[in-house]
Amino acid sequence: MLTVADLPSLPPTIPAPRRADDEVRVALVTPAQGPAGMFGLSCRMCAELAAAEVNAAGGLLGRPLTLHHVDGGAPPGAVAEQVAALVRAGEVDAVVGWHISAVRRRLAPRVAGQIPYVYTALYEGGERTPGVFVTGETPANQLAPALDWMRSELGVRRWVVVGNDYVWPRASAAVAARWARSHDRPLADQIFVPLGTRDFAPVLRRVELSGADGVLMLLVGEDAVHFNRAFADAGHHHRRTRLSTLMDETMLLASGARATQWLYSAAGYFEDLATSDALEFTSRFGDRFGMRAPVPSSPGESCYEGMNLYAALVRRAGSVRREDLLAVSEAVHFGGPRGDVVVRGAHAVQDVYVAEAQGVHFDVLDRLSSGVREN
Image (spheres, one colour):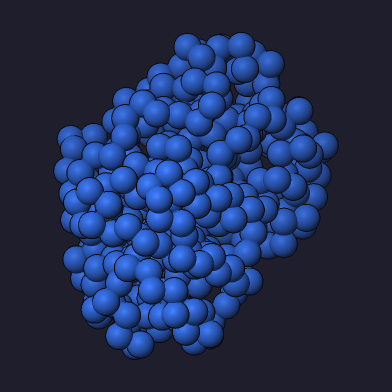
C-alpha cells in the first residue's frame, strides 16, 4: 500500500513559502495521526485529485488552486492555532477538510469569520457558524433512517451504544436514544471510551450484560478496528449485529474479514457504490494514483466533495471573499461521486445509503434518505 513517502505530490505538513498573489490557496486539514490517521492519506489524495481537475479546467478565476496540508489529527487547540496563523499571515483563502468535531469546534471560531471553511466530515449536526459550509452526513439523514432500516429489514430493536467520549458520539447517541424511546425500546446501555482505546474487554462485558441485539458503533478509525477484532474474538459477531455511521473500507481491511460479519454502515458514499458518477470517480482516482493507492473511502471522498463545493462557490461568486461566497451559497449545486448536491442552510443535501460488510468490502443494499437535512 502507498505511504505518504511514496507520493511526492502529497508533502508532509511543513512551512510553505508565502503564497503568490496569483494562487487560490486552501488549507487542507486532514488527520495524519491519531485514531483517524488511518484514512488521512485517502482524504489528502482525493483532495489532490479535485485540485488537479479544477486546475485542468482553468483553475479558479483564472488562478491555480493549491493546497497547504495541515495535520488535523494533532490536538484540537494546536490545529486551530496553526490554521489561524496561516489566516493571519494571509497565506490561505479557505479551509477545507475532514477532521473530528472536537477540532472543528476549536477551529470554526478562529477562522470562519475571516475566510470560508468547508467541513467535510459526518458530524452531529447543528453547526451554524457563519462562514462554515458542511458537506457531511448528520444523524437526521444518516443515523435515524439507518436505525429504521435495521428495525424493518433485520428486526434489530434493542441497541447498546459504544462510542468515543467526545461531542459527535455523544450527540449521535442522544439521537439514537430519542429514536429508541419513540419505538418503546430504550437504549440498553451507553458506553463511552477515550480516543485511542485499545482494550475493549470491559466494554464487551457490559455489551453482554445489556441483552441488546444490536451495537451502535460510534468509534473513530483505529478504535473501531480494535473493537471489531475484540468483538469477534469474544464471539459476539455470531450473536449481535453492528451498525456504524463511520466505517470505511480501510477500517474493514484493518479489522479483517472474520471481524466484519454482520456489520453494517450508513454513508453518502461507498467505494462500491454502483452509480455512474461514483464509478467514473473511482476510475479517475485509479488513473491518477494507481492500483497501490488506498481506496477512496467515504472520509476520503468527502474531501473531493468539499473541494468541489469550494470551487463551485468561488465560480458562482466570481470571488474568493467569504462574504461573496455566503451571498451565493443557496444558489450553488454541483455533481460528484455522491450525485447531484445542493446547498441549503450551508449544509449539503445528499443521498445516504446502507451497506453490509462482505469481508473487506461493502455491498450497498439500499438508499436510506434523499434530500433530508438538519434544521
